[in-house]
Image (cartoon, rainbow, N blue to C red):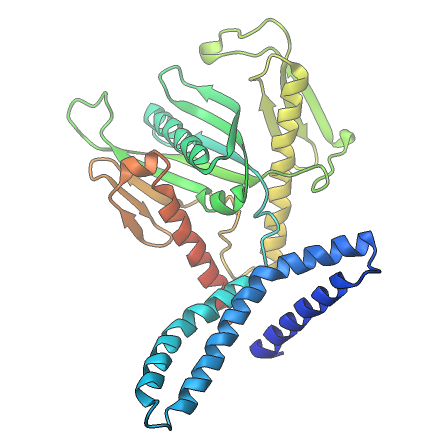
Length: 353
């Protein structure tokens, strides 16, 4: 089917749905189903209509070129519409790309210190706070699930549940190795150190997405401990869950209630299993293309934060900005995320070829 024929088919379907919804005898269940389809098609139909309108305008302006009295006006109109056409076409093509089913989901954020000792842990804490500020700017709810601090201000590991509109769609490209270059406060000679932290962003799975069988779990309870092994409480409230088929292990000890720790641990486990399944399907569908979307692949560095030069570089898209303070405050992240989304759309359009 040609591109134009596909667009005509979508316009016809939208018109058909409008007629069906206007019928007085339509049932409640059918009304809900058709109403959702009509609503989902709406934004795409608007883009198609804008493209069709521009195409019709171009044809009309070309016809007017033959009239000496209208030629100057027609040339001006033609120039304007032909400039708009590539962007209008791309808008429609992007809207037709298959949607990532996880885009509308909430997310589990996990940050871990990598190579670099205490410096890496301090950087991990900075990244975690960066995402916390970013979530606040977006009006998202940021709930800390666990924190393993070093006692010196750094985080060995930290995780959070982020809830809001299109959370995973905006954060999914943050998964990977984040590298920092800066002079540590303890460094007397002013030498720049390089360290790293890994970030994983997982779509938060619901029970309908991933069913976990009790027989597949081994649940251990133990006494919570704080930094340096100090006891946090005197009851066995901490929970460690082992998913036997995959070997995945999740521990949770931040809550004083064993029940709450178990619920949080299951939430993280469910999301990790969901991401594993998503990645398996993505690999099967596209073995040749390196999938960025939600891959959680942390083998390569994706971004470098150079404090002495106030420089942030995203290596996947060769984008560099000299606004490190704005990025670390969360406000500067959008520019990188927007560029990564555009890059991903371009790659997927190229794959459709």
